[in-house]
Amino acid sequence: MEQQYLTVTALTKYLKRKFDADPYLERVYLTGEISNFRLRPNAHQYFSLKDDGAKISAIMFKSAFQKLKFQPKEGMKVLLVGRISLYESGGSYQIYVEHMEPDGVGALYQALAELREKLGKEGLFEGPKKILPRYPKRIAVVTSPSGAVIRDIITTVKRRYPIAQLVLFPTLVQGDQAADDIVRNIHRIEELGTFDTMIIGRGGGSIEDLWPFNEERVARAIYLAKTPVISSVGHETDVTIADMVADVRAATPTAAAELAVPVLNEELLKIKDRQTRLEQSFLYQLQQKNERYQRLKNSYVFKQPDRLYEGQTIKLDRITQRLIQSMETVYHQKQRTAQEIIAQFRQQTPQGQIREGQQQLKYLSQSLHDRMEQYMKDKEKQFTSAVQQLDLLSPLKIMGRGYSYTTKEQQVIKSVNELQPKEKIQIHYVDGIVDTVIEKITPTEEE
Image 1 (cartoon, rainbow, N blue to C red):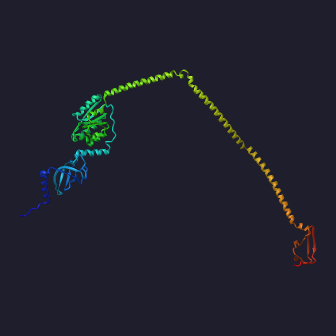
Image 2: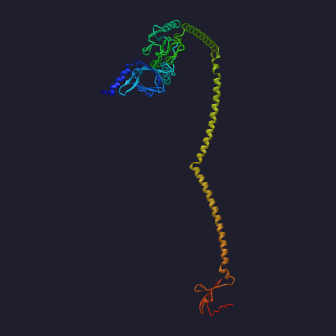
Image 3: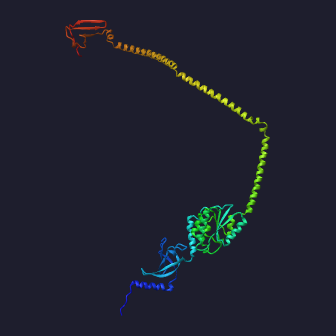
């Protein structure tokens, strides 16, 4: 018998039919840890689910992934619901995830915590809160028209402040379409722009029932609303994201109505009380002004007006006296200054300079004359002393004592060696000259 061989494609198709036909694999509930998860925006998500002993590939289509109320993360333990099938091209089996939620914590609670963290980081909870108007004229109510909420609000407002106008915007407060309906009515109220206050509320319920008020788009619509918003969702223990974003949170619809409007009778009593106080204050002020008028009327200022200026007159006289004294002091100072300037000016005139120059010339001439006389006397003394010294050194003085000197041809003879016999010589005496002829020369013998 010849063996028949199958193609890989045929075998894979056979196995896929087995997987798809198995009723146990049609809907499988798995628990495990997410692995190899990389968020692909606006696309199908591929990851793995594993535990300590095995791992399976998983795929979650875009339509199913968009319904998740939380953000899957690497390593998160989750609960999966899906079907097991074979991927023919790769020959591997995998789970096609239809629903997923965190293991141990409900998906809604997980999504609520993540959204709170996200909006908190953006500052929606800590943003500036608008102040509720004290006396609103028109109040918009966003709630179900058939619930107890609107009845409680209408009853409370009519009892407390019947002059306010309530306008109901019928809204779905539960279900998949509720969030969009809430946002739509908030936008309608903002577009009208004629409301002083907005109340958003519904009765109590489970977290699933209240979930539309935890949607991100509802929170952002409340945050961006220019009309002050009062949120009253669920019971006092229920706190939704809408409550945290709103300007004021009320525990119940009745409390929301009480926060929105005052008590008219109390306000009228306050107005009456303030009117009475204003009248009393006005009468008191009128009495005070009248008493002051009477005091002023009886004052000496009106009876004796001259007395009003007595003090000013005395003050004026004193000021005038001080002014006169100051003027005199200034005048004398200026006069002295002028005299000093005139004296300086006179010293600077040509006549004064000439007189000063003449005096200086006279002084210098006398000084020069005295110096010349003294100089002549000093020179005369020097001359007399020099004459006396010359006289002492004069040859005539020596010749007067019997000395003489001999010359030959106008030359003084100092030695007999300069003479010859029969030569003519002249002998000079103090009182005359003797011409003579040498007869004999007798030299002096050396010792």
